[in-house]
Amino acid sequence: MVQFGPRCRMRWCPSSVLHLLRCVWSRYCTRRGKSRLPLWIRESWAYILLLVRSLCFNSLTDSDVVFDSVFEPVFWTVDYVTRWFGKVFVCLVVVLTSSILAIVYLILLPMVIDTYSPAWIAWHLTYGHWNLVMIVFHYYKSAKTPPGCPPTVKNDSPFVAVCKKCIMPKPARTHHCGICNRCILKMDHHCPWLNNCVGHFNHRYFFSFCLVMAMGCVYCSISGRYLFLDAYNAIETHYQTPAPHYTFKEKFINKCIIYMWVLTSTTAVFLGALTFWHAVLISRGETSIEKHINSKETKRLAKRGRAYKNPFNYGRLNNWKVFLGVEKRSHWVTRVLLPSGHLPLCDGLTWDTLPFKKDMMPV
Image (cartoon, rainbow, N blue to C red; front, side):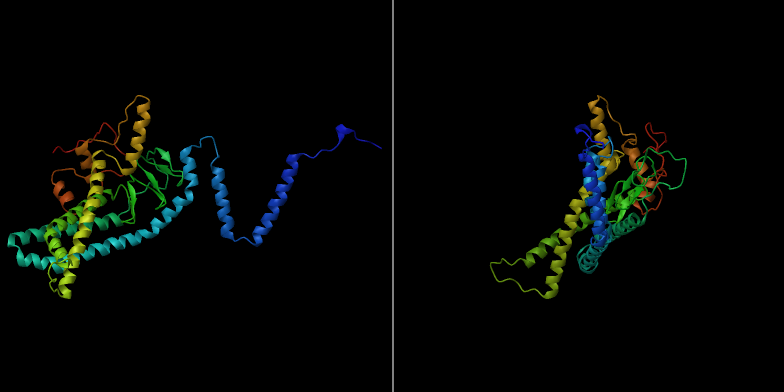
């Protein structure tokens, strides 16, 4: 009979025991989960585990990767809500603009015709309707025009990177939009008020809409300031003497004038600031996303003692010509001051870099 000494005794390895217990517990939990836990809970739990494991996926993990992974559910929720509320925002723009137009045509226009001289009436009618046509045209075009996407088939167009989400080549100035779930050529931002991305093919429409809408709001605010003061004083209740009697129609008209002036003045301030900011970016040959990227590159190269230069900055005047699609002097009228559906000067896939090779028209 063979006897085992102390050195030959069978010893349990702690790691083996833990592995055995882990297998038993996982099989037990799997059986229980299949019978009790709903499918959406198991899928959510698997997704959370995948996010946690992605934090230590490889040695290239940095703070940006960790931040994106941790807040991925938040980003997904924001993208989903923004995508759904885009139609609500578009309806809100249409309803608010239509209400201002109704007040102008039904209340203010009869006052203008009764009180102003023929020259002032002609000026108000001309400018007001030009502004209205420009607003409607550019809002419709900016909302309905696709911003432009890179081709999904194999082509010879140069690219600078591969999109991590589309797994497709990205040309220069192209970025992925999480709300539209696609890459956008020369993406500026996703605008919920348009329910559309602002990119290469509708950037001009978006800026023109912001500009003419801000001009229209300023026009209504300045033209109706005295009517607003009269209407506000009419509904003021702090009187030394008994308040004058106003009919329901007069009270309704006064409240409509106050509503119009407050809405247009508020919109003029915020939309005017947004328009000014985009005008500065266009003058520098940047988009909103490129502003952030160029700032980071400037700081990064500054630490190395080098200066960063935006390769798409052709000079202020040339930047505006490229953005507006101006190729000759008459285009300042036909393509800028009047509604125009012309395409941009380039296809959005390839861009001229410094030095600018095109011979732009001198002004």
